[in-house]
Image (tube, rainbow, N blue to C red; front, side, top):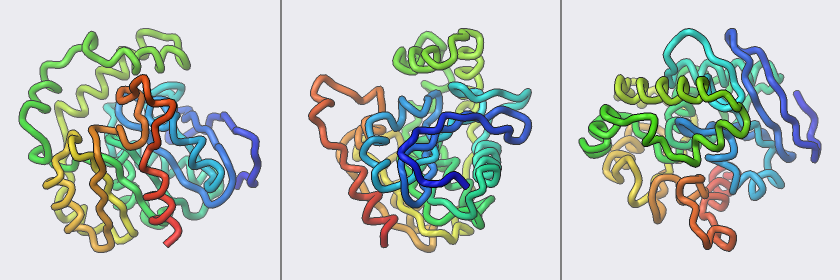
Length: 263
């Protein structure tokens, strides 16, 4: 296991046949950060890493086909992403970690709890969507008919800043689109099988409805639920939510993490 240090580590590890990129920031108890679909470490967590790193050792990952991480000749899936993150944790020598995933990363974090519970302390799932009826039909219609041109420019710019290969960017987009078009729901049985403590966070105007996230929270044995103001990722400064006043904005997520993880 890496010793605590103020040094920022930027490295790769061979994980289930691909080179997985990761960064380690800060000192303290390990907390894995798992970004959203189409994203990088920076686009999902760039605004809150400086707020969390004084208290936790952050293991920030980039998933299959995203950013600096390699790809394999398979579709991407929440289950495979969970297996990849679990193997990275083992490679780095951690026995148990807390996990914070956002959006698609939240689904991956919950798959960690299902498939690799022995590695998980507590799970924070921000803006998860676990069933197709958990959002509005227009969302799935948009996913079905979406194009590369409609991908947020901030995501394109962030990918190319760390991996200047347009073909790999287009490949990542298509794999993310295919995962949502062929969305694999979580069964009630899977969700009920989660035995580690979970904190679910959702925005009032998020992709998933408050009713959906509330219903999912009732299926998990040990679960807390926080509904916060704003839309998808606004509570952590996700890059597509940024506005001119962001530099002076206070993101509400660190106190929730602090209270939940230190209980």
